[in-house]
Length: 143
Length: 143
DNA sequence: ATAGATGCAAAGTTTTTGCCGCTGT
DNA sequence: ACAGCGGCAAAAACTTTGCATCTAT
Image (cartoon, rainbow over the protein chains, first blue to last red):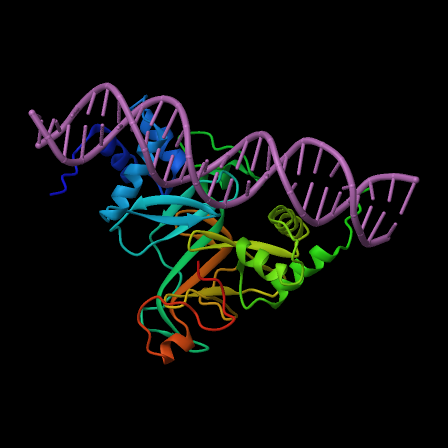
């Protein structure tokens, strides 16, 4: 049968995604994981991300044209993309009321919905930043 | 000074986007535009899409992990992606009330929002389709 | 011991650039 | 006439795949 082993790189990559403040881009995962595994290669990240996705542990979301991955099973949520630092956060409050089965004007039967908010994250708002800039700390992934 | 000319390829690309039923992917734009300009190259499409975006005539939206472009200035709207035929439609009713400036729980200052609904479009719902299938007519762009 | 996993490098894709002849103004 | 354009091809960026080595089990 198919084995699927437990390896150091898989554990680290999974942990990085679990501890993230929101969905991470491939480059973010690589960078953060390399803090623990200096020799980690991109190929492994791609392969692991694919594997974890197939196993249903994580799933991809695309924001601003960039593929990102986030831990699955965290309930209904949406995202906030900061226009200043580029970080993406996970929001746990939902601004729409469209349960599956709702019939939208025009005859569209809604089964799911996705919302992304754009603006200034708390940190950037506080700093009074008005334009895009590189994030300071262990932040997201401005591209 | 910067001139910016009116050319056949730009006109065609702009028209293709104007006549589209929803946002189009780069490949769609190329294919549809080539109906009028057989020799059109991809590079021109990319350059033109970028130019039109900078000029504010069109703007990019990412749906299902794929970058698409749509005409700007058509008012506030969102998208509906059909799970059966893959077509993407433009919706003119908005399910959320988040005017720019709204402060979202957690201190996030909202400047804009994007909503995508997923489900069955009127046609597919009527046809009783339950799984993905190729669209029949001149529809959108299932990939 | 052995199938599976990883790193490195080569191969694919997709998007961007460089060049030079072409074209709108 | 001449700066901006478009096509073609090279380049860069991003993913995937092949292979020999290494490692959970």
